[in-house]
Length: 210
Image (tube, rainbow, N blue to C red; front, side, top):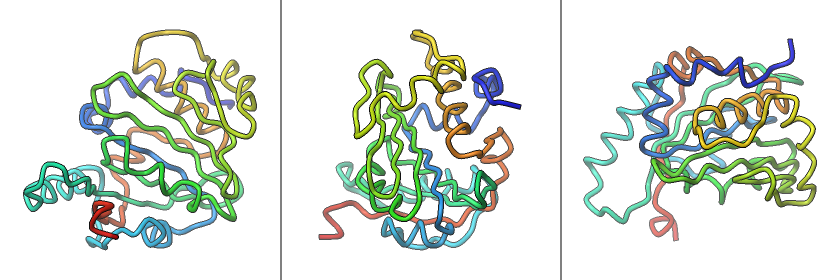
């Protein structure tokens, strides 16, 4: 069946997604790379393995306790293999406040594709990015103001999955989850992230990698 926003009504009752919205997150689907390759590409320091979202949140809490500098932008990530169109994809959930992953997306998509959506944690900014082979094809906060090499490429799909102008964050996110599925073939459910077999990592602050 063709995915629509209705298929993601579960977001309203999701504990892990509520935590992501509260603190800020990036959820990226990567074609053509394994979880380990994705973490290596973004310079993540390995932190072992985790069973589900709770272990990822615990990793982020341990990082916060260890980092004294409130200006430090290090963040925890979890990567897991998921089935999608054309083979396996990697789901990467980053607890980055919505701002840590964009610098990595072009490199992650080279030789494949990435689809990313994020939130900056309680503030009214929710971005979407679609890259193909290193090129930003379409990006937007609001679809009417899309940019990239093909800014109007997703207009028809947005209409098909149920996009409408609304201030309801969860309704807008349901549209973006459905759009992401249309582009990747990856169906994300409550259980997909809650029970994922994550490879965990910590991406250091940019200043620490200079």
